[in-house]
Image (cartoon, rainbow, N blue to C red; front, side):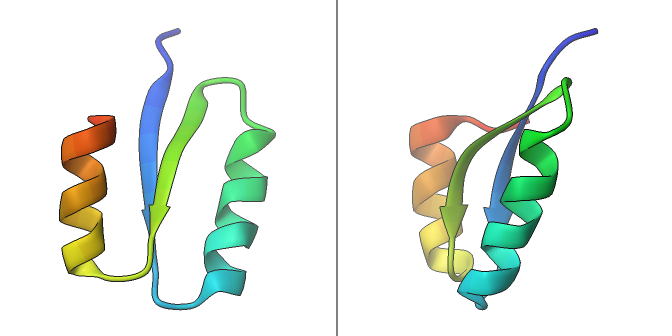
Length: 51
């Protein structure tokens, strides 16, 4: 199965860390970055090319 690249976006750092930790335990997901808001998400998406 192909790996799905994910960019985790939420304004709460604890929530981002939690989702990142859950996805790290899944074989078919790769967290390529985190962002705290929409603007940062757009910038990170351009850099990391999530699916």
